[in-house]
Length: 245
Image 1 (cartoon, rainbow, N blue to C red):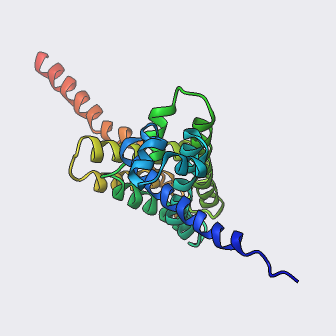
Image 2: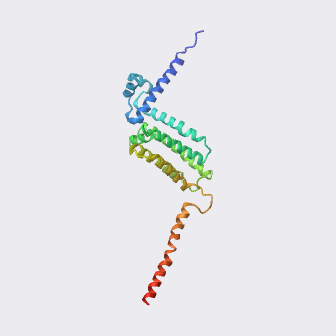
């Protein structure tokens, strides 16, 4: 009986290791130069490999770009989604998702977020790369929207909370943070993002006492301010009338 052929068992792990190393280098390039900055030639030079060696692992530049998007999403899920999902459902989980998201963005200020830069590169370029990127972003948005809905179900957020609107506002905070911190280099952008998130939450939080929602306070406030003015004007007209007489 011939011994089993173990060549595949030895070669496959090495091939995976090589592919992982190429993908790691590609992620670094894409973070600094964008997905369009990726090329088989640039990676071959960086890895000190032949172009055919890199090509053997990815087949095409497009496949390389899609692989980078998937790897980025996997790491995003590992750092942001999976730890946060272990928090209690409702507001604790929603807060954890935002805090971990903003923590990752703060680390990426020096390199760049592939979700954001990729959207700029491929917003008007249909094709498999754009489709893969959009699908990953939608998946993350779906996770965040579900956390908002669960916070409503748990009674932490008001029943009339619009999850789509709240998601839009939270995502807008991340985009503003990335713009101000990375592009404008403004100090304090991270603190402003945290403050803005708390303001978004405060608008949607369930109030423990009925009738204390912000909308009620805004409706009552003008009437309270205007009450003293009416008697004052009436008194002035009465005094003027007496003087004329």
